[in-house]
Structure formats: C-alpha cells, structure tokens
Amino acid sequence: MMSTSPLSQVFPLFTQEHEMFQSSVRRFVRECVEPFALEWEESGFVPREVLRQMGDLGFLGVRYPAEYGGAGMDTLATVVLAEELGRSTFGGFAITVLVHTDMASPHLFHAGTKEQQQRYLPDIIAGRKIAAVAMTEADAGSDLQSMRTTAKREGDEWVLNGSKMFITNGVHGDVFFVAAKTGPTSGRGRDISMFIVEKGTPGFNIARPLKKHGWLSSDTAELSFENCRLPANALLGQEHRGFYALVKNLQNERIVLGAQAMGEASRAIELAHEWVTQRQAFGGSLWDMQTIRHRLAWRASQVEAARSFIYTTAWRDAAGQQVAKEVSMIKALAGTLVNEVIYDCLQFHGGMGFIRETAIERMARDARVQAIGGGATEVMLEEVAKRMA
Image 1: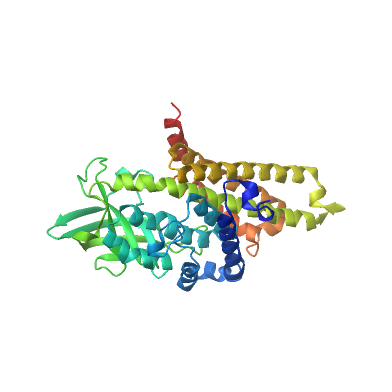
Image 2: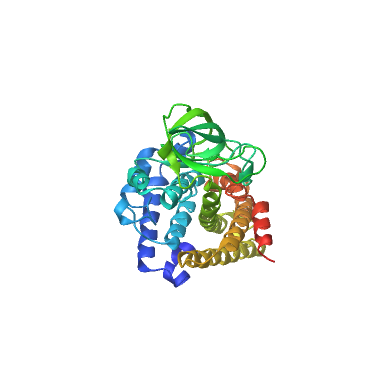
C-alpha cells in the first residue's frame, strides 16, 4: 500500500524532493493533526495557529515563487500534499488547507497585478491570512453563468450586491476572491469578473455559518454583500474575464480533489485491513474469509489504478499539456470510487463502523461530498462526453 512504497517506486517521475516533501507533510499530520483534530471537529474550524505553522513549514505555497515565500514546485507536489492531507482521515482539515492553497489563492497568482500579489501572497503563503473563493450561489453551482451577484462601477468604486453559498473558510477567512456579474444581469451571460474582498469591508457579512453532514472541521458559510463598496483596484484580473479564470482554475481544483479522495480511500483500506486481521469471528479472523479478502484486494487495485491516472495527469499538467478531459474524468472517478471504497470498509468494521469514535465512520460522512463539491459527478461526465467527439 501507499505507506510502504517510496514515491519514486510508485511513479518514476517523482523526485527525491517530492519524497522529502511527502515525509514532511506526513510527519506533520501524524504529530500536529491527528492528536488534536477531533477537537476541531467539535469546534467547527481548524485553529489558525495550525495553518500558520503549516505556512512556516512551507506547505501553503508549494507551487508559488520563492520571492513570495513559496517552494517553486510542480503539480505533482500539489498532488502529494492533497493525498497526504486526505490520509489524515479528517476531510474538513484537508479541505480547509486545499481551498486556501489550490482553489482560492491561485486566482490571485494567475490574474493579480504585481501590486496585488505583493500585498497578499506573502501573508497567504505564510498562513497569516487565510483565503477563500466565493463563486457558488444557492442557484448557481457548476452553472456559473446563472450567478446573480452583481458588481457595478460607480466612479472610482465597485458596488457589490448579492450572496454566496457553501463557502469554505467562509467564517474565519481573511481575504475572499469573489465572482460577480459585471455585464447584463438578464440571461446567461459570461460577463463575470473577480474581486478581492477583505474581511471587515463594510457591506460584507457572514450571513450564517452552515452546519454540514461531514467535513465538520471546515468552517463553511453563506456570505452576503449589501452595497459593499470596493476600490477600483479590487478588480482581480480583466473585467468580464472572470468566467474563464474560474473555469481554468477548476481544472486544478478537480485534480486536487481527486488526489485528496484517493488519499482517503487508500487510508480507509489500511484501516479496514488492520481491523479484519484482528477481529475474530466464526473461529478465525475476518481476513480468513475469502469474500472479504477479495473485496479489499479489488478496492486496493482500483485505488492504485486511479492514483496512477492522477499522477500521470499531474505530470502532463506540469509539462503544459491540455488535460481538461482527464481532470473531469478524475473528479468523476475519484469522487465515486472513494465512496464505494469507504462503504465497503465501514461494512467490514461491522457495528464499530457505525460508532462516532471510529475514523471510518467520520470518513464515510466526509467522503459523500467528494461526488458533489468541485463539480458533481454528473456534470463531470458531461464534460468528458463533450470531449469524446
């Protein structure tokens, strides 16, 4: 299984730097996350000092330049980070970090002016400011063109009105990258722009924290904007080009979520294997039952195949190749597979799998959203189908 094989043996394009990075993240998770994360599940958020510690260790700027405090690594390193965070068994912790590193801050890095980058990126990479991206609305998720939040130019200001839903890091975040319609509000236009909105800006409020089925240690909120006035230089990227920026970054988001999901799946198999080799029933261990051995072997085979696909796609992305179809495949495949794997792993835990004190019970709740967030499986399959012609 993953925990026993060096990365370079699993996939030859991983380097010693990737292996050292994996070891560092895994050690941090073991020592600084696993002993405390149950408390974070109860409180509903990851303490900001933990994220600052991750910043100090260089985990929050893996692919950003050294001039801002980043590590200057590649897409494969991002996959390593996501997979290791997934293996923590605390999906809420993992997504808190990954939204900050790979779903929110890339908007600033790819579209921000030099001034904007210098102002925000060092604090984001250091964990002093936590980032969120606000594009989803109650009636507009994957269907970005249906969003209703608007931004209108009035002199030297933008006036933002509307609301956003299901925003990760929404309660305790510091800087938000917000999508809004800047063209005609009627119809399904793509005239969307991105804006930088700091916590505490007048007219910007946390409408309510959201209680969720899983990912309990991820602070999630509905946001509201009521005549929220922003300076002209709060525009992130080109006016009316935000739709394309969002679509572009969704490619990165989906490969990261796929890697997180396979980290969760591989760890669930390890937990199930530990349990069934120890649990005695009918005169032997559960592992003695062929149906259980074969089912876990089959699930392990599926996870290894999916991981190889993710690694290859990450390498191709780092090489500058077009992988839009493949990342949609990954999101659909991984989001479905992690749920199937953890369903079986919980089943083999028997009654203990239904008890809150077990990791597998928490993982089962957390896994469900992997087929929904970042692009529902049905939407992903449609994206794949469009590219099959």
